[in-house]
Length: 495
Image (cartoon, rainbow, N blue to C red; front, side, top):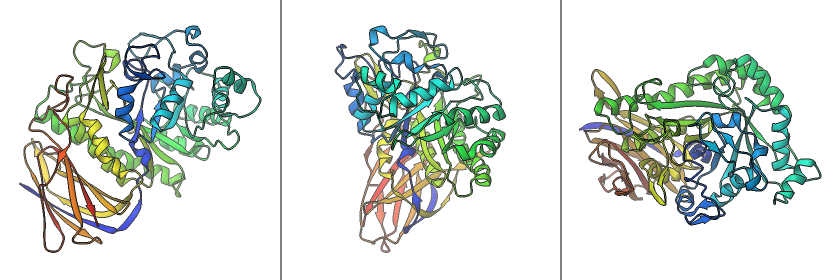
């Protein structure tokens, strides 16, 4: 059994884990919006104002802080005016990016804000730079946020919303290096400066403007954007997916052995290097860290499930995905000074989803359970700690076997631990300093005996959190913890 030594200084806080690190993303892609979230008021499926009640209730349990919409690549072909007004009169369009299906625009601005109200979450809207105009974006902001007399405010009122909404987070384009226009960094920097100029603050509504940032390790893009437009932005996005195989030849979500498990664990940990190197460039132009790094697309991207539309990006979600989520959150916690929001892709039925649906049936994924277990970290103080972990080795390569993060909130210390080895326990010596030696300890664990374990509509509880009691307290108050193979564990210490 691998041994790991962890020291947590519970009385030394390094900063705050922004709750928005636990954000979500819902794009008009496959069955995420239609069926997953939106069924319409007249549907037989129980709903609240057209939004699926079962999905809504499950998502509310995650305390979702922020929700990004409408894309993604869809954002730069989305014309918001087609999605307001009486639904029977809304224009239909072809979703050219995702499956070539007809988009009827029944879920638009009003419906999105209603979803956010029901979820009690902050809206994050991504505007259209790729195929839209400055005027179109400017008028959308006016429509949503202006409380006065104007053409857009009047139209909003005619469409049933008297008062404007509160909108903080606004993305000026998406992946403009690719599906958002195939632009050069230098060109997009100028376009960003122009578009954001006319995305105005009305009244006391202050936009937090997010520029379209780099693709994975395009450090040149970050350099140019920070140099040429940094003073005009509040956030810079970063996109990186954890892919089994290659971009051109992805592997399936469930058909893997230990080499496929190891590959995904190692690629997940690469997020640390990406954030470190992009942050270093940002520090050069923004040493005060005023501009946030917004990782608004992350997660696993596998081959679509057999028999489904390739453009719908529907994949199963296994224990492997749960470990990916846990590792990413630990990395985001580590970079709390710069990383202020992340948005997993995506919320329902797409890529690394929280929830899968099939008709009226719904199932929670292992990733959902990690979000639920880790919500104790939201807005908590990240604690100073050190970790000395043995390695998980396979075929001459290795990664640290144990990943740990610790935070403090409301008089409790929460320690999350990931054991990435699928076949070996990990013994962890946990030295808790700055907290009473007689504090009450409790725990929960997410694990299975099978790497490919996942939840189905027929067996929805194959992977779900269980009470965890495999720890002992020493005389000095230290904990001796034995982590099961391939597990995500959260310990709570009440001082």
